[in-house]
Image (cartoon, rainbow, N blue to C red; front, side, top):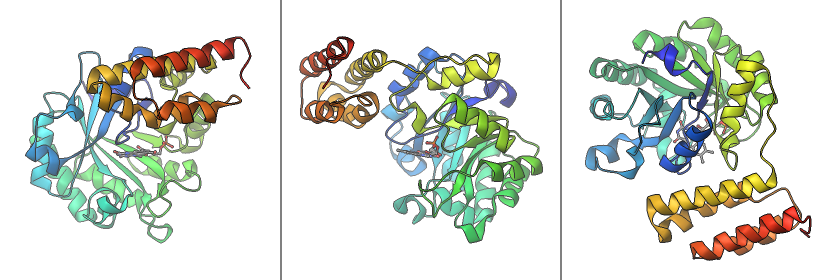
Length: 323
Ligand SMILES: Cc1cc2nc3c(=O)[nH]c(=O)nc-3n(C[C@H](O)[C@H](O)[C@H](O)COP(=O)(O)O)c2cc1C
């Protein structure tokens, strides 16, 4: 698949470590047959040590899918990328992660302060793979170092086929608001396709982001939390102009049950139940008593008990008895 086919729906899933795992990617794919899925960030150091890991799992429905690698050693990243071609339709390099332990090791967004090394990574990976290669970065490291236009041009010249840009700086982490208008400056100055990322959480914000950024599409991260159908609704809107409604409370609770069951199948009951706790705030919210219910759910250690509680929440809400 060429880059145009991979991004034809104009919407991708942004990579999120510990979130966009095999299960969530599968749930999103059940709603959208066409969006570009992305794995969580896969450390090239870790993958070099252990190849047989859950993080690379996929099934036949996951295409189009991009596998994201992090690291700073060009040959190591390229060897991992070459290996991942057995799973991936595209390789993405993480140049935007802001967290301390990543940037301290010159990975993630630290690469924006070292464009020579970033170029070498892109050139080396490109020479070892036959599928498209993309990069994901931010506006810059700080507001005094807004090098995203030149940086994007350099990545393009080094061989990148596609860019996802998060409209924040590293120093902002996840605070403030993503600046979609700045992304238009990058779009004007490169020839390869660009997806805009940051704060797209609805059809309305997707449309506004696309208009302000003039990008070729949007990458959606946190918006899919508790709402795996969001990407499909945005794609549907881009294709038809029709606005489909967000899931009702009952649909969200049913979605939580499905997510829970799939994680238990994937990870086993003990680990699966602990893993899903981070998703409760996103599925069980927006009604009186939601935080009390969440407090009860996180203390539960049996699938049956949690399912009964979720059924109870759905029943109470359908009777409009939630207090
Ligand atoms: C929990 C979490 C984990 C993330 N992990 C990654 C990652 O592994 N690789 C990456 O490039 N970005 C990662 N990001 C950043 C997202 O891909 C995205 O750029 C950011 O959340 C802004 O988009 P959003 O507002 O749509 O969430 C992560 C974000 C969150 C919240």
